[in-house]
Length: 556
Image 1 (cartoon, one colour):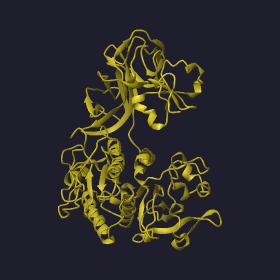
Image 2 (cartoon, helix red, strand yellow):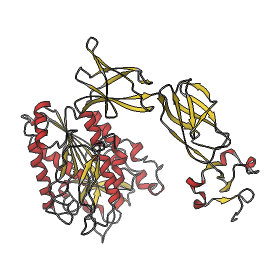
Image 3 (cartoon, one colour):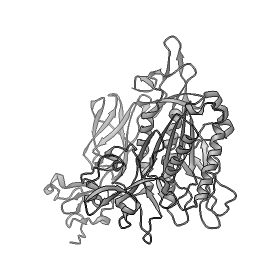
Image 4 (cartoon, helix red, strand yellow):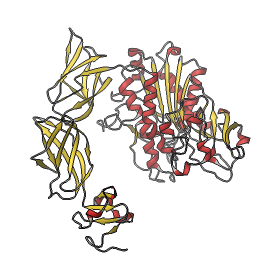
């Protein structure tokens, strides 16, 4: 388990005073990320005294205490994208509800926002990962306030060794109910003079309609009579169309980024349900993620109200492509990381050369010194420090080819990473589906002296076109299925690439299936040909019919 997860302590994952629904409770489940065993609050305080961090990152997950009727699989999945959380414990015997224990993935196991920030900033800053804020939309205001207050007590304890807290910079990232928690936390930090700057990133912050109305500035809505978007108060909105209005919340940080969608529903004429929100003046993601406002979106969104959305905030924060709340963290994970990079600088290293074979000597310059170690995918490798010219070097070990990150770090903390290509490396195969005697072109980084292996057999003759392209013909006797191709030379082995060998050719115009030796194939237009593998594609399930002549049994 230690190979997959952070070994640090995770607080409050299974509160004993909630025996039936033990993932509920009023103490947020969180960890101060570290690669040290049982690293907790006291160890974090000791580390703060040693490294004197300038930045504090706090990542806050969405609701993780749903009931037996909710989609726990989706609930767990969106938790991973942001906080890297993984559900560990068994079901509760009394009612079948998950108990609430967590582990947190390291990057090599699953790349989350939390693990990425730890890799890039954890050596000199603090990463606090809240896997379950217990700040729920269907709970009482008192219960949520208690959960928030309990986390504040822990946060004050963690940051106690820092004398001048007003000089810190905070990055607060929250999803769903964690987004509302992030807003409240930022407001508290501001009121108590914590931090000279608070960067807030929220993904689909979910407001409780009645209990959190004090966060409202105004509401945006589609005026069906004037055929345009306007802003007003709650009374102006009406309750007849929930996808065409949204609240606009107060921005409490120095800089705010936000995106939201409108996957909500009506219950008895009330909107006392989670509602995705805009944030006043927040920067949106790029429009390639949120959707073109000119009608080139999914069919159900191609309507006048969305085509007339203004391009400025808060309307630009509206994701009109997404209609699934729980998919938002996966979609916007990379955007969040990019935003952090834009606001918080990272150390940088440079690799010379940037690609190589086994035993290639690689020079590392940039943010390095004699105390640094070199890692390939979390595995420490031998390296040498060159005092005169101030650089690190290592020889490429025997490792399977591909794109992998070279990292440098001190102790168990990575400082900086850079992508390195281990040759030989296959980046793509054209075409990805083949039939016997068809030519495959491999694209990647190769050497002329290598050998190609396809479906476990060595290819005696292949065409070396360049260092980036080689091609070969598929054997006429190959059986259909998913086959792998790779390349070898000296002690180097490339990554494996899957290629589908097909047994049918479909006519997309007539929806007919043909064997590879059908006598009528020459009459089919090349643009209508589709290669299919019967066991993988199951074409009969999707309405394809057999050719009367070569397969038989046509239903037409």
